[in-house]
Length: 191
Image (cartoon, rainbow, N blue to C red; front, side):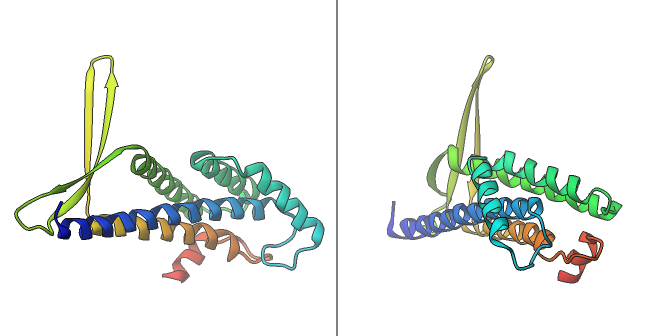
C-alpha cells in the first residue's frame, strides 16, 4: 500500500468511526425518546425527582436492547401513546421512518460484521476504495457479496444516521402539550 493509499484508507476508516459513533447516538436518541414517551408529565417540563428515578429504571430496562428491538419498542410506544392523534400523513411519515431505520440497521450490521479490504481501482494512487465482503455458505454452495465504500459514500451514511437521530428527537422533544402531535407540520416547518 502506498502512502496515498494509506491516507485515503485512513480518511475512510475515520469516517467509518464517525458512522459508529453517530449510530450509537441514534440508539441513544431512540432510547431516551422512548423513555420520555413512557414517563408521566409533559415533555420538556421540569421533572420531579420521582420521575427522574422512574426514567432511570426505564433506561435500565431498555439498556440491553439491540438496535432492532429498540426501534420496535420506540414505534410501539409512539403508536400506542399517540394512536388517537395521528393523521394519515403522520402514519405515512412513521412508516417511512421505520423503513429508513431498519435499512440503516442492516447497513450497520454489514459494516460491523463483514470483512474489509482496500483496493486500488486504477493507476491513480488516490483511486482506492474499501471493499466490504460477506461470504454466505448455504446448502447450494457459497455466495460472495462485495460492496465498495468510497469516502463520499461513508460521509453520506454518517449524515443520514445523524439526520435520522434528529428526526427521532424532533418527533418527541418538539412536542408541546395541548396540541395535536402534528408530526407532518413539525417536519415541514423544519425544512
